Length: 268
Image (tube, rainbow, N blue to C red; front, side):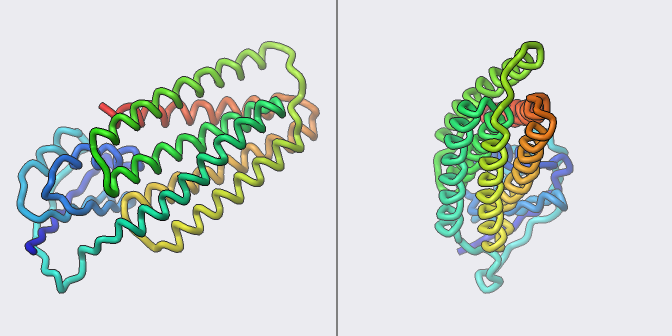
């Protein structure tokens, strides 16, 4: 089977959101068999079964400052094109289930303990779940279905995050009871462990695929959020104040809103 490799430099490909945007845009081109992203070097490698000028044209329409570096014909013996979609799918399904479980666990714990930090962290986990779902569709699913899932999930995430941010502001101006610091620290620690396990799975896979790389970045960022919530729980205990919890919660809600806006852009 003939196979070509086109290498593009995409200067404005700064984060996984641009990666997902490219996946959706190029997903309708049947000749494309695999997309390999290098986010650090801002390089996109497209493996395709026939030459197709639409690849470059579609990338130009995204206005990410893309430029074709070269297109070469590759041979099977080069072993450059390896179809490991089933392995990727299994890994993404595992981390998806973990994130969805902790989304439910944290939002319930946050409501019970009166912690906006945990509620915000739960939405951050939900945000990652959306990314994993999109990546699963990218591995072997319908582009139209992928857009619908992104749009529905994006609006749901945006709605919850805006409500959460309003609640944070209301609590800042009012007199609310102190959240349960022990619950905050225990739940945040469990979420940290869960994300560490997900990160371990991604590193173990040793994959440089777009889905794996993007998911690794999101999970690494989650560890920072988990740490922030954990520290806020300690500060709530130390100062007997709800302000640390509200500050962390507000920051994370803003991050989640920004992520939701990016996800909605992908669904257009």
